[in-house]
Amino acid sequence: MPVLTTKIHEYRKKYHLQQAELADMVGVRRETIGKLENGKYNPSLKLAMDIARVFNTTVEELFTFTEDEDDCGDT
Image (cartoon, rainbow, N blue to C red; front, side, top):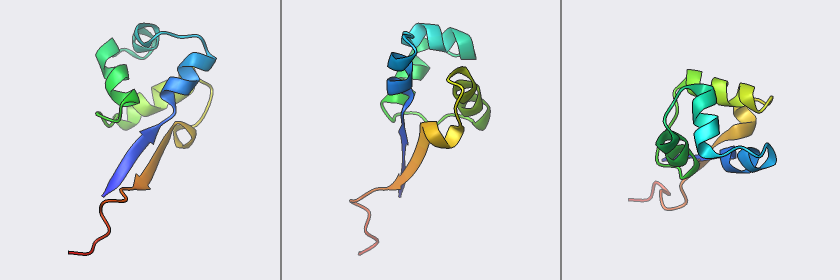
């Protein structure tokens, strides 16, 4: 099963933004940013694009799908 990984945390630090500040900029709660950073929430396409726009980068740069190593398909 694919796992979504994100670089939001490192971009936030690079831009000196707190979770709450980024949340305000993209119209979500601070908890949503925390869940995104911890891989506990998959963003909508609009939210992913809004966050990428804040950091002047692409959605593909911020979010990556990787295969879960525990899911080898051997059952």
